Amino acid sequence: QVQLVESGGGLVQAGGSLRLSCAAEGRTFSRHAMGWFRQAPGKEREFVAGISWNGGRTLYADSVQGRSTISRDNAKNTVYLQMNSLKPEDTAVYYCAIDLRPYGLGSAKEYDYWGQGTQVTVSS
Image 1 (tube, rainbow, N blue to C red):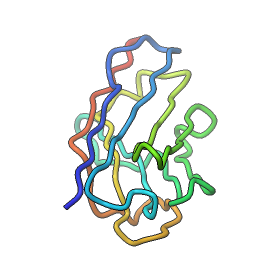
Image 2 (image 1 turned 180 degrees about the horizontal axis):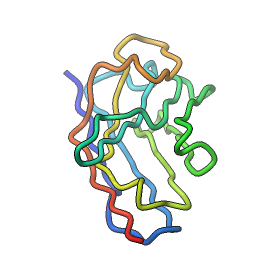
Image 3 (image 1 turned 135 degrees about the vertical axis):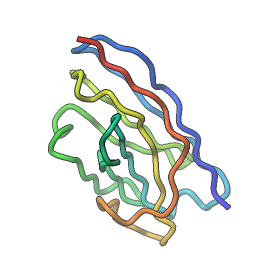
């Protein structure tokens, strides 16, 4: 069993920043790739960013490339998403996800379990 708990969402003005956190329990966190996804109202869930099991490889969606940074602290079983220069179109529920296969590279698709999400709202 794995538990993922996101935090750090909120209301921010366009151009502002937020740092999302995701705490993982129940797995050897350091062996697993992690990712962030988001789902806006009326839209499908989409990949935002992924990070490999050891943090050595990261991948970003084009929509957030250059504005966001994914990182992890394996000692704290936590993955982060720093988002800068936020835009109203970034408004969504943000979910973290874990690839239950060991030593994953943080791809855009290979995730098995998602957390409950945290709301990010960007006002114009």
